[in-house]
Length: 163
Image 1: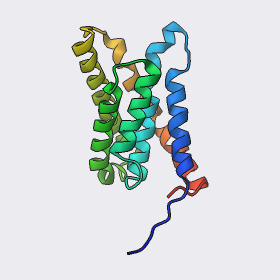
Image 2: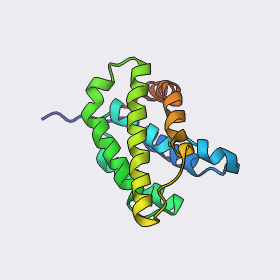
Image 3: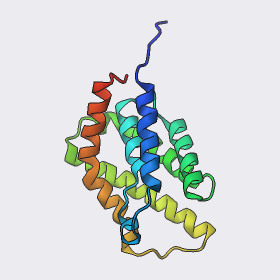
Image 4: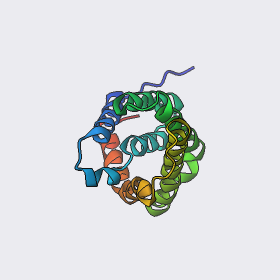
């Protein structure tokens, strides 16, 4: 049995913490609807890039932290992020070879699933299901931002030799 040394774990943790901070950063009221789902985007990247290190458990823990930070029902974001991480891990070998625009379409589906799960939880707990088309804006904005997020995180992974 060979021991594999992993490097740069702090880079993964730091990017997830920054994503969590960006998700609670105060914005003007009109801009709140356009905030992308930063933790979801970062977890999708790390699950695709390093599936042996970032998985469903990290997604669950990140979701629990997001639940606490947003004051949401405990486990709501955790379950949604765990599902997204699970699907990303199952698809990562196919999606990694796609060009960025096709990756962005796959990420759009994962973001839409995340938003749909959160909407479902909101409907069950608070009875609010009518959010309007503006509810889906984070999915569209995350899709547009994906190529840049991918390139920035890939460069960080290479610079700090995260393996």
